Length: 273
Image (cartoon, rainbow, N blue to C red):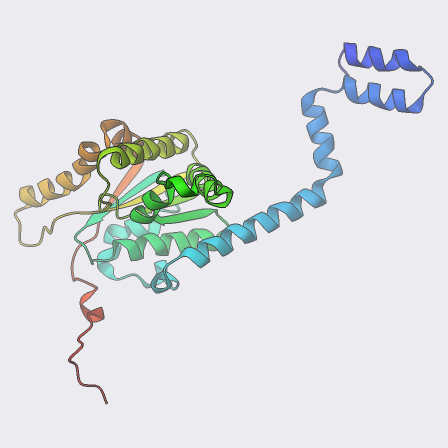
């Protein structure tokens, strides 16, 4: 028990014999840590129910927003080119804080990112996954006629807060967004804000996918330069501060091989039975 506080003395002065005054004085004498522990003990079941409901909501929101083609992305069924050296399947269990998935378009980077995200959700983690283009549009300034729209304003606030605080954030196709001028400056500031908020928290991990040039057929030193150029785009386009926050504890995964989208090409002239 700590020394009586002025609040406790004031309560006791009301009526020393009052049970209510005695109870209030006892609470006033407790430290904040003791009060917090007592609150948790008294409300443990209700708090557990709230946490469960929150986790269900987050999972449902992730699954609802996830592109249908990645609903069954699975770390146990990756194409060999998507898991060079076991880096993709091993990332969740590693100490790496961030992952940078790079390589030519259509070779499986996004599929790998969602395979990791799906595994994280199954493990009970809070995952937010965004196409960067959609995230930029969601966080863009509201048009004049919508500035009083509380629903859209709240959605922007929630989106930014969730991106900063979730366990795993997926930013897909960084660099493909076509923002210019003020919109580009605003997005760079928001991206830095998000990554800065995540940087100091070991539980907050980030996966970014970035398109890079093909390295097939190149000499080793040329291929290495192509990979370096893909990573350097982040600093050149978004600032060294953004790149630095991604680099800390980052595992690079270069995904290249067969173009996995070829089989999905639509031929409107194909004869069908």
